Image (cartoon, rainbow, N blue to C red; front, side):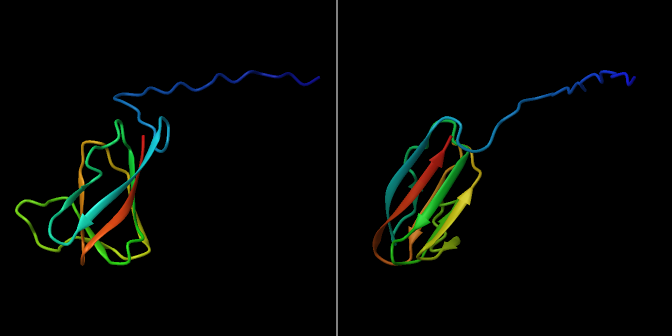
Length: 113
């Protein structure tokens, strides 16, 4: 007759902190108005405990995003074309700014925490 021998579960030690990614608390979508004159924070007030931000550009013009806006670098940054979007795994203490190629337009910003 076969005998079953139990195998003990392995133990794992974790040092430091563990953080999950993705939606675990809430989400927020904000329409942000940007222009071709100045850099605008996306969004003006970040969602608490944010760990993901998505920027969607359906404005009809190209936009650029940047992390540094002082001194003003001009129209320099990562391009998000009309109809495009960009995602960042980013904490709430980091601010991203956007600027339009021309005119005043609206873009959508989704945050997950």
